[in-house]
Image 1: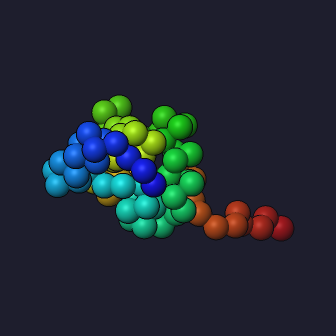
Image 2: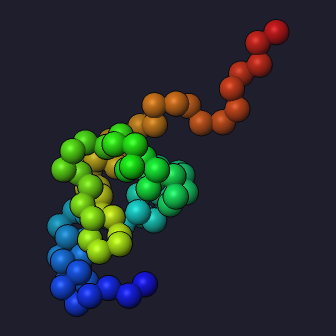
Length: 80
């Protein structure tokens, strides 16, 4: 993806100081990158823990590591 030099420099600086990319967050959470973007747009992460750099998002690593999805994953139980 094409980024301006300023965006790339800002992103590099933030990545060195505890921020991660959406694909890295997806791996930590065990979900897809589009799901991470959906969580961001739903406002389910703490304010200030998401920064937009150009067209990309950076997320605070500690927020992602402490984030739990509010709904359990997998199929719902069958009630008989």
